[in-house]
Length: 272
Ligand code: PEP
Image (spheres, rainbow, N blue to C red):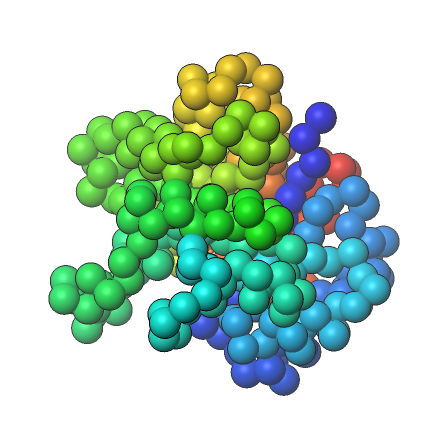
């Protein structure tokens, strides 16, 4: 039995006061709604607000995650955040390989042309290094995979998702692969309001699971949790979360409103 996991990715939103207000709002709304009811819930604030959010959530069941990490523990790497720093700041989780730091935006701003996008440089190799570093540090990684619209239209969805999944896992031993968390996030559905049809989202989450199975066998495949992410909202969450291969949601825009985020948690099967 895989425990449903709902994560809020706040991205580049919020000064400390905003983040504390949002975290407090989620905590209060969740308590008022009967708690998380067996659902694993976490929020991923911007780095600068993690410590403040940690104080606001102290003693609650809501976990905290970083939105990214660097793979080196220390050294002359200006601007980078080591896994141990995230832990030290109060994070138990970290998002790795989100399509935005991979430079694959669902809705690129008009001025995000190719030279600018090149600065959002995660690729399969860095995702793999970050995953290894997160595991060494004892962080729980959420590994994101997903195809762009052009890749989907060209019929490459499964190949892209399978190859990103397998590339992330290079050199990861079986005992560490069991129980990992993935997020299938079709890039074209992120921040666009266009949600992947639930049957198709379920099928592609199954592609992630099968890729894990091909590397580590059926038990590992059954043990990994696969979230769906891409315009999850209160009104589509129940349908998505009811699918057998979808073990949770990675929520961007709707996680910035406490009421919407808690409504998504409430839509999880454990809460029904
Ligand atoms: C995300 O950024 O991971 C995401 C799924 O965003 P949104 O819910 O806004 O589409």
